[in-house]
Amino acid sequence: MEPYELLAEIDAVNGQIRDAGRARLELVEQFNQELRTLIRSFEETPDTFRVYVDLVKRLERIARRVEKAHGEGTLDHTEHFDKALAVLKKRKFQTATDELDRIPVLGLLARQRWLFEEYKKAYATLRARRDNLERELATKSAYYGSLQRVETASFEEVASLEARMEVYNADVGAFLEAFFKQAPAAESLKTGLDACYHPELGFPQPLRHDHAERLLVFLQREALGSIPLHRLLEYAKYSDNKLSHYVTDTIAFRQVMEANITWLEALDDVKHRPALKLSLAELGSSLAVKIPRMIAFLSKRDAPTDMITFLRDTQRLVMSGRYDRIRTTATVNRDHLERIQQGTHVHDLTALNEEHARLNEELKQLKEPRELELA
Image (cartoon, rainbow, N blue to C red; front, side, top):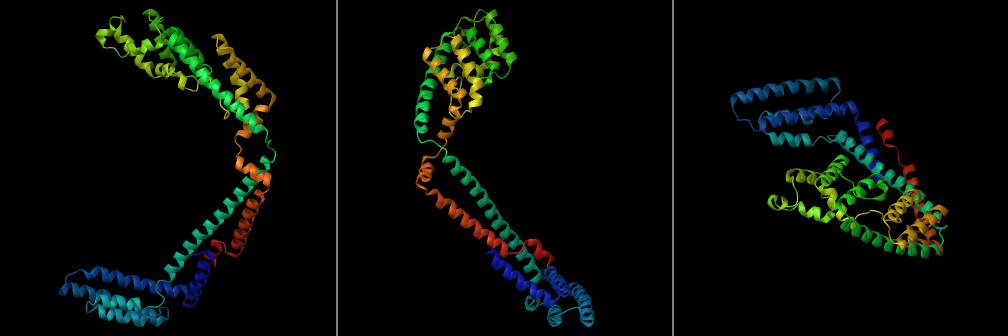
C-alpha cells in the first residue's frame, strides 16, 4: 500500500478505536485471548469426567469475571462471550471459536499496530528515495559542471599518454625479466631487498626481511650466489639425492628456500608484476615522488635510454600540473561530454529536479510516524 493509502486506513481504524474506547477494546481482547487459549489447551484433551470438571471450573471463573465487568459497564459484546462460554461446557470448541469471531471489534488494536509499522516503513522508503535523489542531483550537477571545463583536445593527449605508458610498461617488464634471469642470484636478492625500502616502486616484498637476508648469507656461504635466480628455484624442486650434488647443507637450503619461496617466485615473474609500471590511475602527487626513484633505479642498471626519456617527460608533465588535467580527462565519460556540448544534460537535471520536488511535496502532505503514535 502507498503511504497515503495507509494513512487513510490508519485514520479509519483510529476512529473506530476512539468510538469503541481503547480501554474497553483491550478488555475485550483480553477475554477473547483467554478463551482462545483455553480452547487450545482443552481441544486435544480426552473427554473424561476429571477433564470436564476442570474445564467447567475454569469456565465458571471466567463467566463470573465477564458478568462482573458487564455489571460495571466496562465490557462490551458480552452476549458473544456468554454464548461461547455456554457451548464450551459441551466441548463444542469450533462453535465457541466461531462465536468469538463474530465480535466485530476484534483485531482493531492489532490492525492499528500493523498499519503503524507498515506506514513507518513506507514513509522511510519514500524519504530515502527523496534523500538519494537529492544526493544524485547534487552529484550530477557538480559532475556536469566539471565537464564544462574539460578541453576536448585533451582527449588526444590522454590517448597519446596511455599509448606511451603501455609501451613503457611492456619495455620495463621485459627489461626487469631479463635482469632477474641473467643476474647472479645474490645480485637479484640484493636488488629485491633494496627495492623493499621504496614500496612505491611496486616490487614484490618478502614475507620477512630477516628471512631474505638469511637466504642471502646462506647463498654466499655455500658459493651459490653466482647462479641465476631461476636455477636456484630449480634446485628447490630437486630430490635430496640430486640436490646434494649442488648444495652441501641440503636441510638448511630447503629451510631458507621455503621461508622465501613466494618472494623468489614473484621476483622471477616480475614481468607480470606492477614493479616500475605507470598508470593514469595514479595521482600526480604520487608520481612526483615515485618517478625520480624509478629513474635512479633504472639508470643504475643501465636501462635503455627511451625508458628513462619517457619517465623524464612524464615527470615534466607532473611538475607542470598538466598531468593531473590529462588524468581527469581520462575519467570523463565521452557520451556525457557530448550531452554537455549538445545541451541535452539539462533535461536530465530538470527531470531529477521535478522528481525531487514531487517527492518533497508528497512528504509534506504526509504525517511523521511519530505524530501518528502520539495521536
